[in-house]
Image (cartoon, rainbow, N blue to C red; front, side):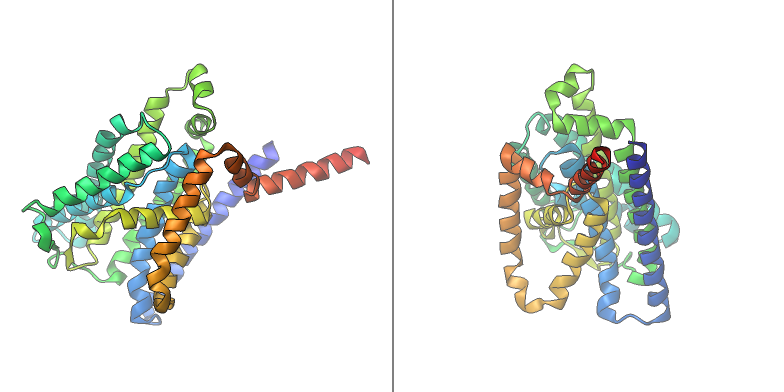
Length: 336
């Protein structure tokens, strides 16, 4: 048991170090002008999608609930953060203004997560997915019809627009912070309580775990990072529209989590990079992307609602396979 914990801690440390090294290398290449314009413009969206995937993994992987409203949290954080940044653009420099806007975006999205989570988390499975999907669409339509956010024409963010080279350090810090929180939470007693709720809610309640409190905490924490990522994302455009943050984006984030492995931080990072880079590299197949996403979403719903399929999926997890191999080796040594 102690060796297993030590091995997992080393794995987390390696993941964190490799992520930091990748951002450092990308920053050096970007500052030296070695990257093409196309690659340079992809760096910040990749950073944002890593944050979105890892934060959604808190709900889907750690808590075991299916949420399709992540784009809604992102849009709430984006517009609230950008409005603050626009208001402060004439008085504060970017290195002060951007962290403040990201903080406000995260807090606003977290508050929205609380408002949605209080009634929605009484549900589970497909019902929760439908409610969160509906909430995300409602938020999109409300923002589209507000004058303060520019209405259907979108919010003019030309006053706060910044190039990727200026925004990448903030994206790197946000990614590393999100990864660190996810890793620490998984290893903490609170993380074990959350996973106990995921595995057996009735048993968790019977031993005194406050299920409602933990569910709301995870939901709000996930929404916070999505909102902060949204505020950062808004600074790389001259105009942002709420219509861009629809259910398609929520499904895209969920697909990243599923393909990377639910509960896996390194998997979410790799899947976010691949799924953001592939559409640019394979533009001729871009029309089939949503078809693949739809198939993956159907498979997720089938697996989460079928005990046999869920057991099969868990048995194919790399951690489970490695654990079985260690047990075979241990039993072989004992037999010898």
